[in-house]
Image 1: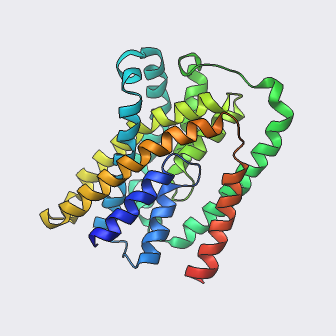
Image 2: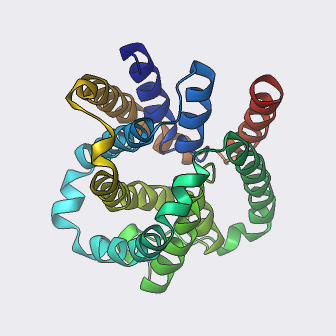
Length: 258
């Protein structure tokens, strides 16, 4: 992997990690376009730069992680389902990362799901709850965690799964989006640490510059992406992301895979 590749993938990660479009799916498909083979190192690289994007949330919300104990307890509950699924299905999940077609299918289906939910939510506007993240019930937190656990499938989108799960439970767009951002921290930190334990031997010291640059680029880009997304969800639906996923899936299929 060249330094240019690591910069491009870092930008892609920083832009897509917190949008309901699947950062992992985009990383795999863009890597395919760039001719970057999905080796064990590349798979680990993709997880490391995801951690760079997650660090942006820590920087932006550091006070919440130090003082908001009620939200932290709910994040712990929401994290459990994904931790369980990730541990049990680690090897199977790794194999899914080898198939660009898996990404195309999940991108397309995810787009349809988002459009359906937006249509369905129009009739439930009066049922939307304006709870703060520390007022989400533990049952709701657990169900959001169950929704997030589906994102172990490449292309599903961790943020998309949690946001749709929260909307289905009647939470406001702002509340569930913020909760999704915060939940990304323990989820991706655990995924990165576990992956390092399993595949640390897949790269050498010569690969460190690419890792460091990709990490830094994704961190900087994500800082701006998080702020922009929060402003966006306050006044907009997610229809644009649903349509984008469908168009992106078709484009990758006909221009790259077929």
